[in-house]
Length: 262
Image (cartoon, rainbow, N blue to C red):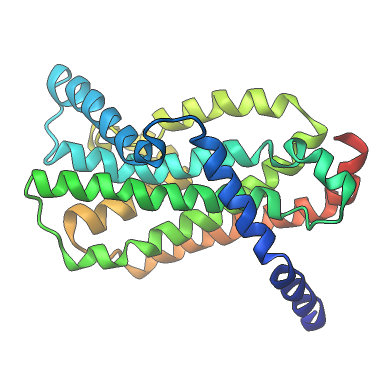
């Protein structure tokens, strides 16, 4: 077991530069021929925030303190997960020609999608901090702990990305279904509405949603200035490791058959 882990680590170190190139490629392709380039990672959440704020805090009269920050703190972490997993879904299929030419650890392709999304998330955080300055929201010490929920969601997204990348090779319809699933997932996560409007029966179902816990974790740090308790950290870590373990297991069991189906 230990020798197997050492072998995997050695292979990862050998191909870490390739992983860096894949991440760089994903970022460059995303903003190719764009005048503003990576500035869109800051502008996009700001523009969405304006639209959502007008609709929900004005038209629907949702009285949420610092609504733009409430929205951004939930939206950024959810978008990181949904976008990276949607991109990871095509990671193996999109690199079929490269896999057939040379040996490359196949997990690098979906992992690169998650890592490039992590870079975008870092720039998007600038938008949230900028709005906090404009709205004169207090910068609490708890903001220093933001890497913790980001790490949890990174593990969760990596596991889900590996799972989707593997399954999509054999069942291409997953790609179409997942788009609908993400849309439903967005509304099932309290990104632009408060959970207080939900009845207890709905909350029982809501707690099954992994992103509910991660979104609430982010808001506890950003808006309440409090570090979530041990129980909430255990729940978030358990969900993340569970998805990572399941995704990794399925990916490794199926990866040798990828070349037969891509």
